[in-house]
Structure formats: structure tokens, C-alpha cells
Image 1: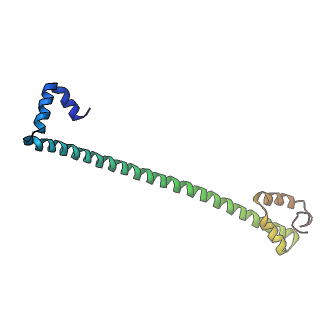
Image 2 (image 1 turned 120 degrees about the horizontal axis):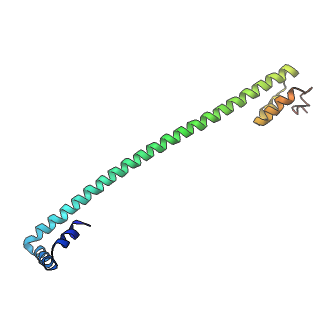
Image 3 (image 1 turned 90 degrees about the vertical axis):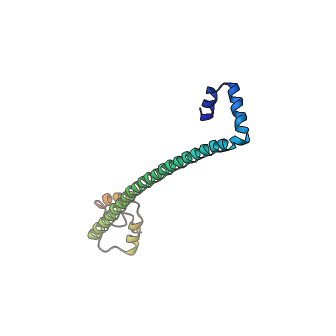
Length: 141
């Protein structure tokens, strides 16, 4: 309930009409203007406070979102980096084992080895234990 409504309840209807007539009178125009100005100032202050609070909430939300995004991005980046590093290490070890067992690897064999997906590297590593040739492993024609 706003100020005007509370005030109207307190004043009897006849008194209300008399009050409104007085405010309409030229001598009381300043009172009416002051009343509106105070209301507008209060409204303006309230809006400014509300906007400042919303801006602060927005900034906090943005900051939190950026922090969470950065954290998730770093986690995913680290995870992908570790996966790539592990795959690279497995590929290198397999290359060294193939060279140890079969000697120098041709460019074609090395290229085929590089094209293998991660699960293919593991399978080839297991098959290497029993294989007698690069052809048997599918690395040579």
C-alpha cells in the first residue's frame, strides 16, 4: 500500500474532497509539486539502488561463470593433454619394440603406425608378442 492510499484511508471522504480542492488551488500548487518531486526522487534512488544491486549480482554471476568455465576448460585441456601424451608414449614404445624385433622400419611402416587409433596401438602391442613379421601385423604389404 503506497503513501497516498494510506493517507486516503485516514481521511474521511468529505475531507478528502476538501483536501483535493485545496491542492488544486493556485496557492497550494507548490505543495503538490513538492509531493511529486519527493516521490520521483525516492523512486529514482530506489531504481539506482536496485540497478546497482543487479549490476553487482550480474558481475558476481559473470565472475563465477568465468571461474567455472576456466576451471572446466583447464580440466578438459589437462585431460586431453594427458591422453595425447600417453598415446604418444605408447606409439613411441611400440615403434622401439618393432625396431628391436624387426630392425629398421620403412617410412611406409612408420606412417601406418602413426595412423593407428589408440585402441589399435594397444592391439598391435599385444600382437607383437607372437608376430613373426611386419606383414603379419598388417604394417607391410
